[in-house]
Image (cartoon, rainbow, N blue to C red; front, side):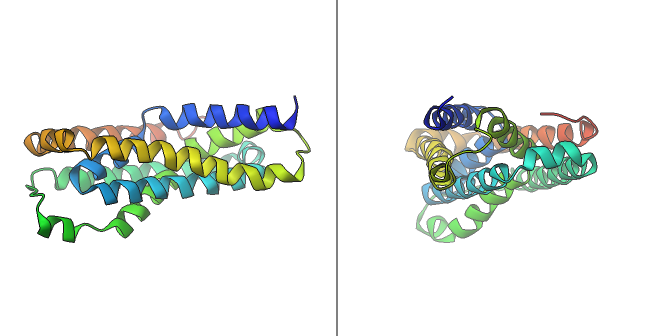
Amino acid sequence: MPASTAILTILAALLLGAMSPGPSFVIVARNAIGLSRSDGLATALGMGIGGVFFSGIALLGLYTLLATVEWLYVGLKVAGGVYLIYLASKIWRGAAKPLAFDAAQAASTNPRKSFWIGLSTQLSNPKTAVYYGSIFAALLPQHPPLWCYFALPPAIFAIEAGWYTIVALCFSSKRPREVYLQWKAWIDRVAASAVAALGLRLILNAHKVGI
């Protein structure tokens, strides 16, 4: 397979992976609806940076390392699961707190914090790391041309940040926000439950090797 075809196939596979439901989608949507559009976009930016990080270590052979050092993979899954459960607990505890989207609320938003939440959520999920690694191992030529190392990271950033920017823009519009305000407690608790379930699943399946 030519290198250019391989790169396009990798990018298509990663786009499908980004579009699949998971903790990243939940966090971006919730920040966009529950905080502000700028918070949602900052979270999306964090997701994009996380994708660049995973693409870099995938290019360096992360999948081979995790397959060889099983305890490292198990440790990553447990740590990621614990973080997701912690994040879910914070969302659950704040579910009953009312929000008012006025000038004071807009001033109290924190895009910088939302960026780090997005980045840490992306990096805390070892399944994303292994997904990247397996896609690269399966599709990238054994000796890719030099231009691949420069072309892949920005292309992957565009895919990850671009997709979650679309999510943030869609969920930060007026109607979704009104629905969120009306059903905030339930929506936050459902989001928290989904994130916690994903974290618990990571911990319970930590001993299983593979994607």
